[in-house]
Image 1 (cartoon, rainbow, N blue to C red):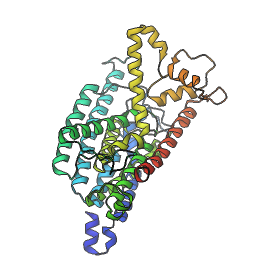
Image 2: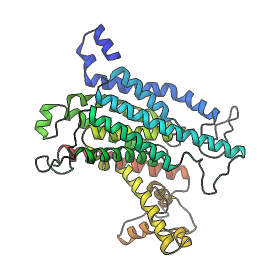
Image 3: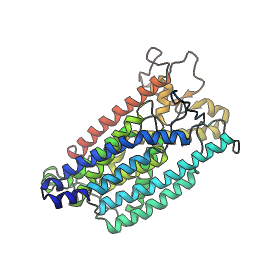
Image 4: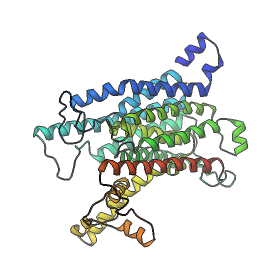
Length: 419
């Protein structure tokens, strides 16, 4: 709207420029979030919008010592939506991204609010806290997944019928002239639904440590933005032998700029030690919109490569649960408690255990650690480990951030050149 208004007042081509609108989308999102985040944090602290159990006392002239507020992702969504309205041409692709983001944000908000409600009931004595949990419970996993699949299916059917998208798949490492498979509707729609739901939940699982999910979101979105920008230019498509994307896909670049900006702005408050977290509201929304951009840009199969940190988090959780159930059935529950595949899951919690110094021998045995030792992989020794939990968290998070950055470079090389 603002881009059109400026062009109507001063008919300069810059107001129609994709790069100008992307830059303005970035700046609008960033400054809106930075302007409103501090008041939001103070409000959430006072209102007790937290899921961790513990005191929320915040006495005057003393540092806040209560749990971190959740639902900070709501402001990220607001910033992205405002930028889209002001700077994006709301074509079929932009509207699709807007719908999927708001829909998944609503599911996440319901889950977060249920966590806040459950925590208040526990502290009020009307509900019991499970011994092994340090966070309040939200809606059941089955209910949440059912809602996600239902909404994703409705949106994907709309995408298929009303958005310019087909079932061709770009296979990593394989030239288009060798293999450019087409999936019919009854296969392509379920694949898109699974990608959106899996991407949203992978981000939600990764959002277990301060800033851990934010950087992979930024790098994955940057990859999609590069694909959409180059793929909508016929000359570059012909030169690089890429699939032809509709010209309207260029608006995804402007949306991507807003998503990247939201992530960078959020790092100001979410970098260790975090002042606020995304919550399920932000994680599900950001994960779903990121996954949908991969589908629209026809790089669905590159999501596991660019989003390798998300894949690692999800697979480690699945492996840990399956291994535990197998050991319970084969060796019994007591043995299963002592022998795990990873020390903890998801994988970033396993890394926390590896980097934490302790004089006592670990009570839990890790099959993965034993496999690595037999392969000759050097693991952190006592001289490399750290005693402070905050130092351990920073080391784990930044190492995984570096993984996200080099996965971005690898993904760009594979898509544009290694074929």
